[in-house]
Length: 232
Image 1: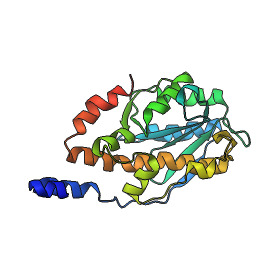
Image 2: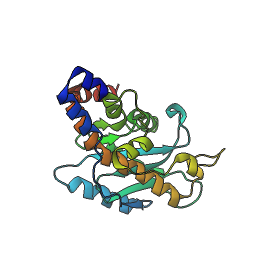
Image 3: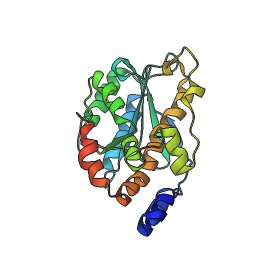
């Protein structure tokens, strides 16, 4: 704002203030584990019946931060304000959904461009799912990219964005995964809360970020240049 004041850009001062206003949201949501094929189909069917079709936030949980060698451990998603879901796939203990069921149920959906999908750092998730044989289509938003465009010098991880926009302190990965272990070692109950929260936060901050992009005149760059590049 000091920079804007020196230049007497009153409009920009007003616009910049708008970007730091936090959204009033209901921070209570239910994290739900989906580890049977029947329930997975039912939830996905509920989403497909909604009109207009809402954004589908998703996230992958893996055993490595390097997407080229990461194996899929679980999959979380959210499309409503009061619930988010986690599908455990390769946890060492507990009941996982069979990988063949995941492929049968979720692959056709993720590959369907008619369902708008969003992610935080989507490139990573696209690469992980691609190595698994699933080409993600219909990606419309990436909250990391949106955050970078509005504030290039800021911090863009989901923990920081949740605090900034929702005043919500997220569960930290380092508090969940012990040294020398991977996400596959995390009990499914705890993994569900963590992973579902990631998808939920991504969905909640999307509209705020897109509002900022519009305020700064960057929405066209974001939608027509940055997001399409994610599929390259």
